[in-house]
Amino acid sequence: MSPAKAAKPPVHLLWGEDAFLLREAAFELLSDLRPIEVDAAEWQGGETADLATPSLFGERRAMLVSNVKAMPDEGIRELGRYLEAPDPDAPLILLSVVGERGKAPAAIAKLLKGTGTVTEVKIQRKELPAWILRRAKAKELDLAPDGATTLVETLGDEPGALDQALDQLSSAFAGQRVTREIVARQFRGLGEQHVWDLCDKAFARDLPGAMRSLRTLLEGGEAGLLILGSITARLRDVVRIKALPERMSQADTARAAGLRFDWQVRRYRDQAGRFSPEELAEIHEVIAWADRAMKSGATDDVVLPLVVTQIAGESVALPV
Image 1: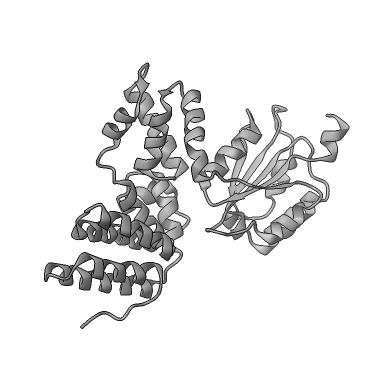
Image 2: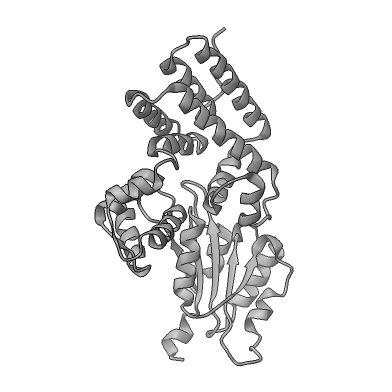
């Protein structure tokens, strides 16, 4: 190994809002190496010794530690001791999923100062079509630029969901040019952009963004009861996710909660973490009131903003 590499051990902290992107960035760094994977919440002690122990067959070791915000204090101390003399041939990659406007875990970032790298991993929404086209090319899918744009418009900005959609298109349209029309036809019925957008923003407690989405829906003539139905369905999913153990795998959680995709688990877990059980019960009460009010003749543009405010903002006083 060259002196330059020895002076900069392969230790990385990757952080950002999206777990899928973090894992993709980690495996790009690892290249052909297959790491030992550890959930920091289940840290037992001695994991770094496993990283430094030579393999029986002489291949390089690597370790991928997810959920590092949940690492216990003893784990952080052990990590600090390891970083005093890290193995220059054994990549160590730490992943931290943060909430919106979150930051890298300060204690871990401090340990890596001067020893490793700390990198935010993210894709701006405007960058998604180009990212989708690169992913499509790697999957040997002939996707038109307007097809990539339509995927974002139809499915939203969740990279994991978009990548799964590319797999579906690659299987269904191998050897064909996949255009905007094909994408729209293939994913019709999975949810219109603005209905998903409204639910995502409301349960992320982004009140201004949720109100903009609601206004777009109402101005487009979307039926108020259908909008309320989508909000109700999202609330049920979030409540189910909140009731399940956080350590349950994404696949098992998706099955238990009745979700179609693993990426929904990541998103709904984040949303569930923003609400107490009492707040979710209050939202349910407001939705029940809104359903009665709209079926009794109350107008959508009066009732639905109250529902969105209850979710994304503060408790509202309901009209008698």
